Image (cartoon, rainbow, N blue to C red; front, side, top):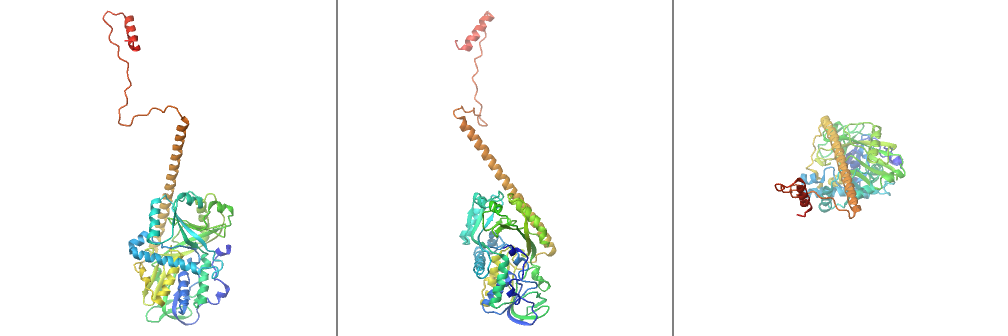
Length: 498
């Protein structure tokens, strides 16, 4: 399956004729701008519910981040669960979390081998900690299992290291219902399903302008015009000039991933866990693919670059975390830009009557794009009002170039802090291990000493030392006694005969 991770293609040949450029005027119920994961999910679900749908894509299906991700599917959002509760309260946080689980369930129901051959679904995801944070782990497990009804397991250090043979990780949270899929096959599989349901997908069709006023909104492309009752903005940072207000609410972040050459038994000696692994600081994200290859995501950057430049950095990172693997050969490097929101939540909802947004999925996971597409389609056609749960997370300007610089510096600081914290945790663990060895050696020496009398113990600090008895001072010899007689008298006193 090495071809799975080569550069993105337009998908199966029988789909190509249905994804040509829009060259004629068209009227539809719903126009979706952007043929990524969220946009294609809106198109698929709306078409299944009987609406006429057109998807406009400036390049081709899944060309950016949607077609270049690791394929991990699990519940939750980028915003930490504690901060989510603080922002919206426990009840709304539960509702939002439930929606994220619905998104994961949706992907599982759609991404089957029958519908998407070669989707290569594997089970389980593990979030590992770079520091020894057992108490924090227990608190989070209780929140997830009791308050948010999510199936999770806490793994102790020994179990984590039994599966992932490195000393860099400590405790872990295991999500048994999380899973992984081939991300590129999924995005192209969505396009095929949407087309079969009746949606029309037009590639190489950028949007020149949008007029959202009136009952029938107007969209202008380079070669045609389109009218629709509803417009769904499902693009990313590349929405362009007509939608700059939306694209500027997203901080562009690039992340690249590499796939190694086949590693054979070397890989199984280093990693036994079959699912995906992420660290608690968001630096490392990796999993086994094709049986003996390793797919590994690099740290983020706020500046665009050629993917090939990140191959050596990822190879160095793999060797740092898994010294047993050493310097591995890289087969492919791929990546794309995602839009990260200031508040850490996706942007989902209605901007004005008939104008919808489903965006801001950077760092969110596949489940949120699926949930958003399903929710927006049902909101338009069924009147589902749950999109209002995302109302507290409004469009916030991301700061332009200044925001990118700040994001880059914050990212560097965060990675540096995480590295330092991890190094300190490993140092403390090593110091504790050395102390245990020293204590064991002392105990063994005492055991082997057997019946030897214990060495004299010093009195505790602050207590007087015992006074050793001193011999009595001899009395002065009687007046007139000779020196010899005095000496004999002293000897008798010392001997105790007097």
